[in-house]
Length: 299
Image (cartoon, rainbow, N blue to C red; front, side, top):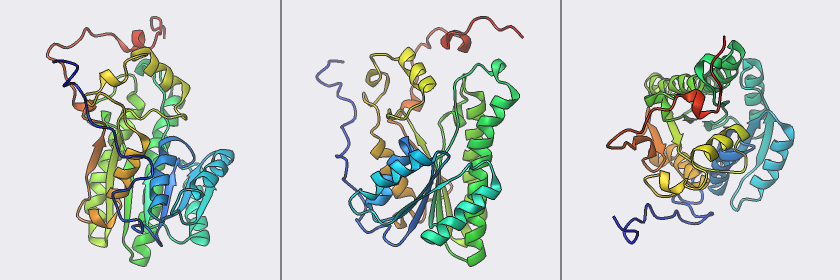
């Protein structure tokens, strides 16, 4: 194959473009966990662009305050509010929904974006490290989802949930046993609750991002990416490019929109087919410990 025909997938439309009508979310409240940074903020921005009132939740007040100012300045944005919340605490989760109701109204859409993660060989994971990831990624997602569902069931109103997952929920995730197990649980919740809550008008879908570099990536994730592909991130994707955060936001706004009302129980992977990539001859196996630069295991 020559360079002339190896073009990859075209670049996305520019930031600020939208596929949905500008008023799609006018008068609706969208709650985004982990909405103060990174991909959560990018998702929130696309809902704001379509007229939504936003409540972003996270653990750090300073980040939330800065994000509120940024999101309020998005053209078309409605009201923007924030709530400090540790989603591992069900009482605090209830408080966030109370705060949302008082400031903006009952959220019509919940985006479960908050998660915890770091690379580690499975044998090195302490009980505390396991709980830190699973309690945030799976249990915290469940607490938010449960609260959203109960409040809508209580008043008989429809709603939409989008939970951010990961492709290793299907494939397994060497080096990320804790996160892969948790994300597999999130995917199962999507499929289970779509059936349970569909009769009441509540849709539940999943959204899986591929490689979307952004300024708020953690140092360990960034470091692992640099070790694996210091100068060749694009060439390691079938698309021959990485994703732009707004592309994930566009997918989220579609899944929660009126135009996807017959889409539920589905997990949409937005990664340029990278998770389906295979080679004709598999590369040599390099143990996770070696990939992470760890020495021999000593119990």
